[in-house]
Image 1 (cartoon, rainbow, N blue to C red):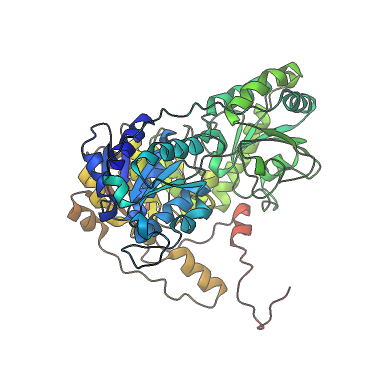
Image 2: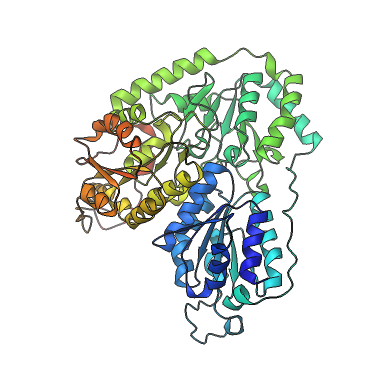
Length: 559
């Protein structure tokens, strides 16, 4: 068979049903094979950037690897933006890139789309890179790519294929998917962790994005209910336990910075004598006091003891490790402590009280959206102030339904990512929340949405500027510059593609408009006008906006 056919058959063997890509000269053999394969659907985007964003949304909402296809050189560079997002959120995305003719690779002859050391251009945001130079090499490359994505910490991978390999025919031996077993810590490590968990008086679970990567949400809830240990989640861990669960405190965005008065969540974390981290990077350190015990469950060995010395490491898959630890912890007495549900409820009530008093207008807008968006909807939050605010305050009660950009903070990622979510979850409501600046990065994908019937509802908050940047420049750098935007009429813009356009009177109108938008059998864009949005007077936002790079008043920078 041809290399293109070998690739497509290998993808089918791995369970792939969708490829997001753009046809091009170096991938003709692959495109021809996709055309003839009824088991895989090709969704053609309008920009390579969208291929990897859509694959990322598909992967995170479904738990299955997402696949993107681009030409080499410029195509790969464009697609790299989505790889950075997938890398930050530990998302299994396979990028298949063409190559220049194999005889010219590395010779700097000026071939079309040539890039010297193409894998090196994305090495920092991929877990593994491989090349299939001949058709017979393709099955091994696909096998290894999927093995890499399904073992250890899931992250993007790259396969590059020269154009001849896509069309040449030779004997090919297809491979079955790798048999994957979940990594479990040693019995000794599990028993030590169970002992300290059973002996702790005020333990706390800090759950991160690794819970979703491992499909460990059910196991986490069983652990919580059997041991009466309450939970705080990172933003990446939102949805790993329902926010309405009586032992869920909610989400924390910046645990190290939340030191101001009236910050109940910070006080809760500081009171813990033991923190059980599950699938979290602890990017800002142990959220509890330095003297607390830290038990760290993580599939990534480099993250296990990075946070603090004396950590009890549990190097393993989150789901398998929780299931192995739970009976040992109960046997060690962890199930004997009284339920802290009343204390959790009191803390949540105080948090809500200060939300209302200190965080306007963000709180009211988010409440209106929370009311209008169905509880089981997937929501992709762009890099906007409401997106930042949602990291701690938007309530999530279903696994994998909260989609953000992690530490990558890709402006404009949310719309194409939401399209990928909808492809994976066609029977569930999907909402995108973005700003006018970010939406226009990938607004051409309205064409893709209409063509393939990907019916996402997109709320575009419009103030005709890069609003957060304009405010920061005004407040800290002596005045905004280069931040004004000239926008289309978003209602007419949407309708010009064949989508549905709606206009809100104000942001609170979303409570009424989102349910109406979800009834349409078409992609919907809601134009949401609003004015300047101040930084919320909330403790967790202070460290994020306390810019250390503001202009010095006297021309000197203090060390």
